[in-house]
Length: 489
Image (cartoon, rainbow, N blue to C red; front, side, top):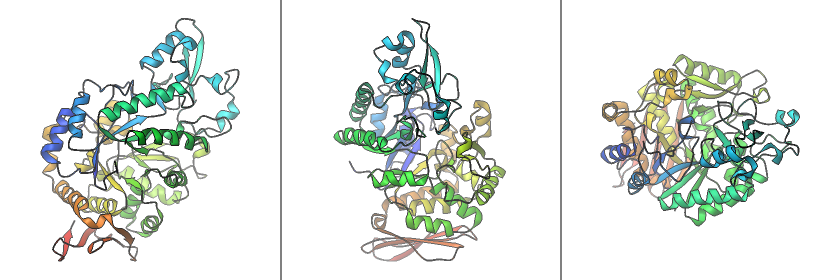
């Protein structure tokens, strides 16, 4: 099943009306002809943390969201994309709970990475850990086995709690491969069309390396899982936050990749009113990408844009976003900070707020995204031009919640009345329907204070012109009658 070259929605199962039934209602009522590319439903599975990203299983749907039948109902009209946290599973999963009880005697013991799988005596060596790209102070958690009282150290890449809520899976284990196969077969049965491999860069643990995107072993795992997905007619989207060269290696391997460079580059273009970096980037990037400006995390900075940005210039962009209410996620490992101490991992806030709640700037950003080659995804808060939800971030203590507002049906109705949202919906329709977007892309020559991008397929043609001084965007195109027309975005 080829991925459709049309706009997709990204949403939590409960963020548009409260559950999957409401989501389906909202989609059919307001967006039946808008999200022709599909719907990415962020983890709808029973989970014990990280807003769905610590799943207990992929065989069930969290009852408060609904059932697999609700997801199938959405799938009747929209291609469904779901996440598979291929690197880890919840501490509360039946698999790990059995391990906590019986230790190495558990039938599921081989799913996990006890430290003796890496260090012979099971004792971690600090010199090895120093080389790793850490997401928490230590890459393992210590647990006490119920039946024996012995301590077991188990690999845990992610998680704020200690011991972690997210337990890494051993992808070298045949048992893990069987489990992943079971999950994929269930996805097929539930009519899921695309699976995002979340945190796939961390699956290989090898001493003497950063334990991140370890070559060539990562490709051996990817080849195995691609073959599995292909056999079930499911497309894969590996998710890797890293130096852009690693993304490009994935692209060379034939994979879809995420354009994690575009969100910051578009911000920088509109804040600095200078298109030089954007034009250079658009001329040199792979085309087989999913594009986004906003998502459930933040706008990536380090390590995604290492060697692409000047950290002094980046600091100005970060400061502009902070002035507009954003918060930051910072890099933990000193080794991975810039020499001048620049340590911004992600800028967190709504994209609309980062652009100063300026309707024209926001529409210019979306126009750039939709003209950039790839499959465009629009996050639900961005769709509704949502502003920073400070209360949510404060209440939960998670800075990412600033951009995770849960909309009631009434709030959705109100948002749809906003001119900026109506303009965005019109732009999405144009991107979905104009045939030129299936043709050839060009970055046209221009001064630094404007942007000119074009698409052409046979006689169908459209050109985007943005004046960065005013943020006004105009699309010139040939309509279905062969007449030249203009559309003020």
